[in-house]
Length: 239
Image (cartoon, rainbow, N blue to C red; front, side):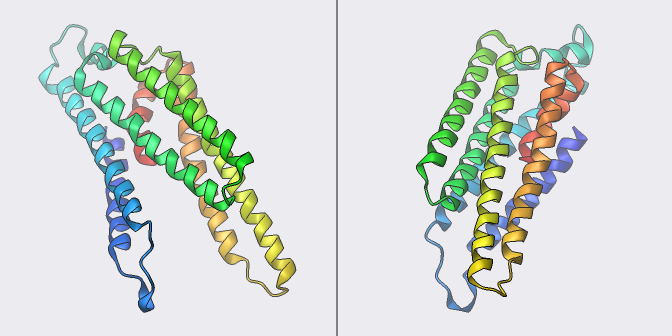
């Protein structure tokens, strides 16, 4: 839980920084971006969802080690059966919905960079819809039979989500590098540092999340409940 607290602290600081930047007026009398309100809404919603998920998990951690410490089976039984408590289902649901919003932003960026190309939009949207469908199935199964650690649909949902992120990274970086080469052909002394910096930022962000998610997937496949719990508490903040 302490690791999750550290990730939430970083998440909070990034949210505050993003909010401040979006609220500032552009320098040198520039126009305010038309989509600023949409970005503010995105920052607000993802922060609220992440906070609810973190708060529910923190409360249940308190219940495990303090309020329900004398329950039959002890803390281990409470961790394994955590989804049977309503606050954990709320945490799981808000975490999945937060992931929908975050993946939707990646989808929008990809479409803009590819100039709304249909051959990019159709497969990426299909993967995104499949991810939401699997996510809803996970929530339904968790709400009806209380399954999580042994839920194969959750594993499939994670794989699709990672695949969506990796494909997004490949598409965006490839497009940036192609445009960089075209600019170099047009302008002999063109400074491509902007394209390089954006591509590097995209790759670094996706790599951190992808590596963490792959650890989550492997631990799920190996039924390593401890690692699964650690990843579950932190992955939303990393994303």
